[in-house]
Amino acid sequence: MGFLRGCLKLCKLDEGLKHFLILCVITIVILPMICTLLRDSIFYIKPINVDKEKKLLKIIDSKRLNESLQILNLSNSKNFSDERPHHSLFKNQNIDIGVTIITVSRNRHQFDLYEPKYLTQVAGKIVSLLKDPALNKTYAVFLCNVDPDPNSYTEISPLSKILPTFQRFTAKIPQRLNIFEKEKQDYLFCLNETMNRKANYTFLIEDDAYPDDTLFSVLEHVIDNRIENKFSEFKSTVRDVTYVKFYHPPRLLGYYSLEVERIPELISISVLFGTIMCQSYAYLFIKSKYSMNKMWFLFTVYSCLVAIAIGRQNIMEFRRVSSSLFQVTPAPSCCTPALLFTQHGGQKVMEYMQNVRCRYNYAKDMVLEDVKRKHGLVGLLVQPNLFKHIGLYSSLRSKVLDPFIV
Image (cartoon, rainbow, N blue to C red; front, side, top):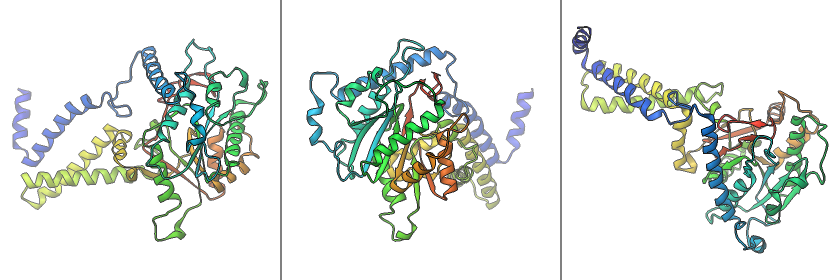
């Protein structure tokens, strides 16, 4: 009887409201089914079996590793280094962008017998991407070995015969510095060594940051349009950009954030799709102006709630359709897996960092934020992410992490 009374009440409702309620019911049924596998949606069901998830990550690692070994020709007898002088990746003059992968050994059998070989995965992918003939800038790729026991870091040996390598230490060093200060000094060393190669830009990538296929096309678009403003009539608007981030932890990219662009972005999406839905509905059903205004409000609220449920991170994926659709916003303070430094920005960072000591709760990413704020410089973030964090074994925290969290 209660269900029947509810149906009778529904029949008495305004036709537009009735249709809207039906839409809501359908959405409540269908949306969770679609979003259960979408990480960062409110309906995402995280795997309960952590060991199973780790096993899956290792399978993905192995697949990427095999692909990289093929790209670098390390899986057969052919010597890739014979091609080196003729390839644009190894130019030592007129370099637009110096790409340096900062690396340190992982795991060392502290947790299990698995050797992730993140460096090989990332180096192979970068070499592959830079062979794209559509790229307009010149690149040089370097490795920066900051391992405290370099002679035991066997993974880098074959790669250093292929790619020019900076090595911070020549022998094993005692662990006297706190790990956060060492990480900062490692970063400064790699930044300085790359800038000494006279590249216009220095791109520092940590060895557990795996690049997206569109990385360098987007990077060149950002340089041309957001740093150098090559195609702008107003050259005076070029900003004093310190660095550009190409990765930020996905968990921090949602709508409920302190970043200034997030709420206006949610409102814009809600109004846009609310208007589209209202116009489509009006074309089919609504005649009165009063009903039109009411339905526009309802559809806007509906669009807002659906966007929150799906998650900003997932909605942002549609921007990958074109390099020009990637969003460039002020950079948050957290995390440094992939940063592009301008020449003057890199110099400012080095000058400031040399006089600051890092510690727990004040790591190098927070120092970078201080540089930007105190000198009135500009840090930018490109979204969606152009890297995946694949580091299951953390060299900083000396433990196993969920790479989707960091």
